[in-house]
Length: 291
Ligand SMILES: Nc1nc2c(ncn2[C@@H]2O[C@H](COP(=O)(O)OP(=O)(O)OP(=O)(O)O)[C@@H](O)[C@H]2O)c(=O)[nH]1
Ligand SMILES: [Mg+2]
Ligand SMILES: [Zn+2]
Image (cartoon, rainbow, N blue to C red; front, side):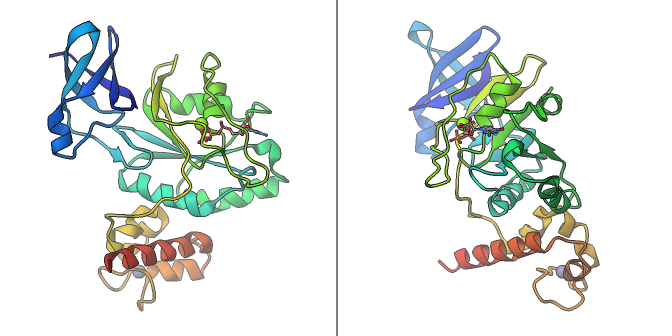
């Protein structure tokens, strides 16, 4: 049975990459009945039908699975935010980090449009939030060619997904990494300060040095459906590190006595903004249980 990797999905068709080229496939009806549908990144088996097309018949079990952007089997998440146009949203960044942590992905934070940012102090401020949490922060600018070579090295040899708000420059970065690519990019609306959702689908691209990278559509909202309150702090590495020292098991690090996480926040060892976002997300998860 031929097999391959789904690299793109457009209006009911799945493009399955094989050593002999990409095969345009439909999914077998049984997937629809089970409400289980193939994802970009899935390893699948398929049958050839007439005129070189195919039908996906089986999906191998997934190593990892992200809902937004929807993609399976990625090793690394490159979480992209821009300094300006649109302004950096730490809220959205933290939301995505939670999902990436939950799937156990390698994570690289990539901050784009350095050319539009101010003094170095502005850059340092963001590093000071995320480095202590254990995240590498890469600063880039496609205008000034900053950080592109480092990014190339980070992408080599694995499947990475670019994720972030519309307009932060995901496709532009990939064009800089792969000059032959020519992905469409879109102006950010000055009036709204938002991107225009230029990229419409998840697509896996091959890197010349080996490895693959997925460009994805930007998003501006991300919730925590299906998550439990107790799971959340494990998705904040700097909290997960301290949680074993909390007095009570199952501590949610809200206002329990003897909470090592709250103590670390008080001492300035955990960033207050990150902790505030944790509390906000916790609240959202709590609220969604009531409906
Ligand atoms: N000044 C500056 N502008 C940039 C940089 N990178 C990208 N841009 C601009 O930002 C705009 C949006 O870039 P895109 O690459 O389309 O952004 P995206 O993240 O792919 O957006 P979606 O596909 O909508 O999710 C374009 O006008 C780019 O030219 C940069 O480093 N500096
Ligand atoms: Mg794009
Ligand atoms: Zn605690």
